Image 1 (tube, rainbow, N blue to C red):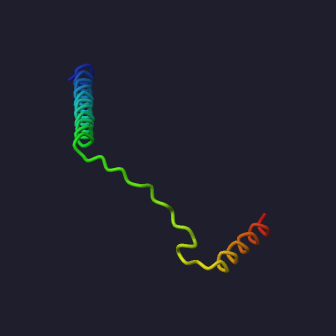
Image 2 (image 1 turned 60 degrees about the vertical axis):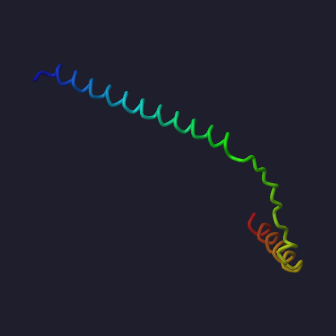
Length: 81
């Protein structure tokens, strides 16, 4: 076998593999797009109310603890400049 035949076979194999991957990915993208459209069309349009983030008051954290933590953070920032 000469080098030209080996390179031709390698190029053919490479081209076949690249075309196969391109076709597979194109089919995959098409399938995901179609499924997304079907789900959007047939699913109920439930709009959830925005969830309020809980405040420290609703979790029962005492004001003294919040003040102590704030003072510790301020002292840390002051000492580590």
